Image (cartoon, rainbow, N blue to C red; front, top):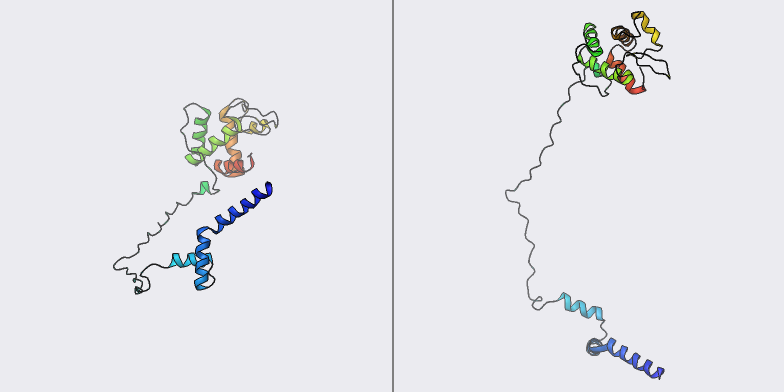
Length: 200
């Protein structure tokens, strides 16, 4: 029973495979010789009725006429203003803010101007001492022993500016500006060093 079923299955597959296409190919093969299925399909696809008699047209020439191509020019870069001598290091500099009257910063502002430094130098000083002490006259660093607004190390160094160095902001600021001027030239010089190294 299984053998008979297998035989019918083989005959069915053969009939489906050969089918009408196989019969057509067999007839063409008999008339023209052997032709493959691929060759006959190419012939059908690549030829159209009437193609044999049609003249071959020349490709049209590309005429640009009066058209022209416009290329938008690249913008000329705007020159950047030359950096002032106070910002020659290229680092970020804090902006100037007018200090509140009567504060330690107001005292420092008058002293900065008296030394011939400008608002840009005062802005650097404000940022520097804000980082160091928060502008607190009694700021003390237990790790290093630094003291006061300028964080003198040790704090007793500020006694050269006045005996009241522990409590008087003017005395501390006087000493601090002298230290900055002697070691870094300007508050912005000290600020730049502090930004690079973490100390001044």
